Image (cartoon, rainbow, N blue to C red; front, side, top):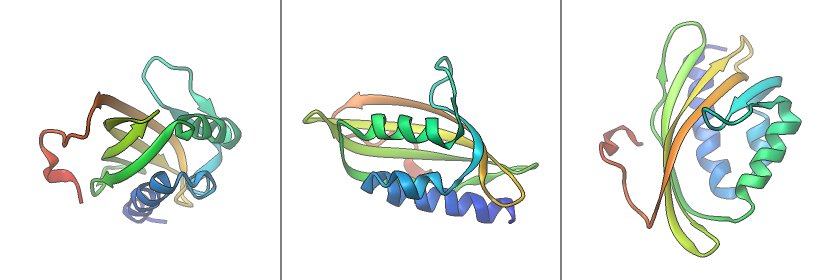
Length: 134
């Protein structure tokens, strides 16, 4: 699968599945031996089982009201990046999570490595420079 196709599918599925907390749909995007880094100084989640546990934990106290991903920027060697913004309530308190994901795909179009950088703020806000969001 071409990287741009894999990247477009990745952001399309993540946008829908995050809003619905559909862990199974998200796992279908990842190779069995994937490595996911959710924060720069946090231990990585290795394999689909660890990723599934992390996603379920992350979604546990969250009620999503809106998810947006930018169109992916595709580079060489199976790598892509996309920004995301999530409006949610964490334990009843409105919050906004905004960040960026970097993804490396294998030849089959599955994510073999992902790395997120993100920040949260209280309340629902649009990040500066939202021109990238679809």
